[in-house]
Image 1 (cartoon, rainbow, N blue to C red):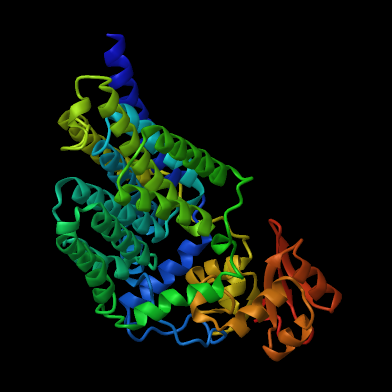
Image 2: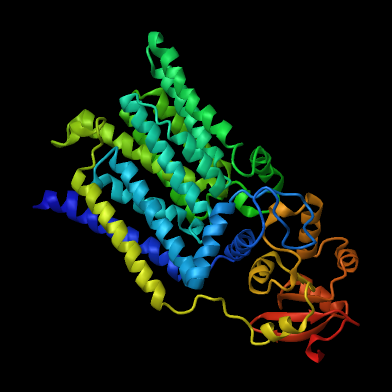
Length: 480
């Protein structure tokens, strides 16, 4: 009875709690402000933009750009058309539940539910701040799918050529698709090294999956420009903290560090392993150290690889009667897999019901914002912070939210100007004059708002820690 409780009931409860928590997290947390520019871009694609020739959200962004997640943005916009912001949050909850289910299924391929459920819970804790209604969740999911596919190939020798069209789809959904190609090439190198000398030529065929994936990445509607769009990220890393190296003094990175240390400790304890597994582990370590943006992928990869290591230890020590199943079809029982599928489906359906009756998730606005925006002429540029601009491009598309979070559309010089303004750096006044801003929407404790007031700008409206300022001599929208 105790053994059944520990091995079956408690892990099942933990899995159910994990699925519910991730769904509620998406439904109840405030909408990420980046979500709004994704929704606006998705609407533009639904109403005239094309992936190979997108327009611009503002004349202040002049860089010629190509979209890296246009299909996800279309799906988000479609969800908004059908269910409003509630529909968007439900979609995010559903994709997140599927992500957790895929992660647990990948772990069940290597170890029993007793191992898989806690690893999924730890992964969720380490990735919680990265889970929002944005396309990047798709990359987390597909990274796990790719890793699990190669671990199965390492066991049965069968190449999963379906990873090639999966990469083609990934390119349409989010810009982190090179993670999948890197995983495929690293796994192919490991398989070649693991093979006996006489079979290495055959094993080298595995490189065809990674190379084929790299080739089809340039055959989407965006064309070969997809490669350059990904390389552009490097030039934006200095402006946004999510591309900075992880801060291991903060909780998500601390949880990742704990998982990494545990994985390395078990790896040392488990003795000699395959080149494939060790190279994939090094790849996960690399993503863990690379940036905040890639830490969720590293966490998920480490969870699956740790499940594999623990499954090998069970096999080596013969800790229970099921130990011998690891390495063949995985240690997760069919019952556990059915329970996972049923639990995920039930959670998604329950999330739909909750979304239908939940309070309106629209951000609270000052009462004066909508009438003030309506009084301004079409295309009026608004000086604001990036996060406010990301909301304004969605909520008030008539206006020109000059600075928003979609950095791909700005040149580096334009980004320099944006952050000079936001930090009130040298030359900020010249930028305001040059760009002919008459109106500003800013937090009242913002340094730029303070300096605008010193420069004679008048506060027309103020409430809820937000203020609307008017340049001296500019028309008063309240008088319109």
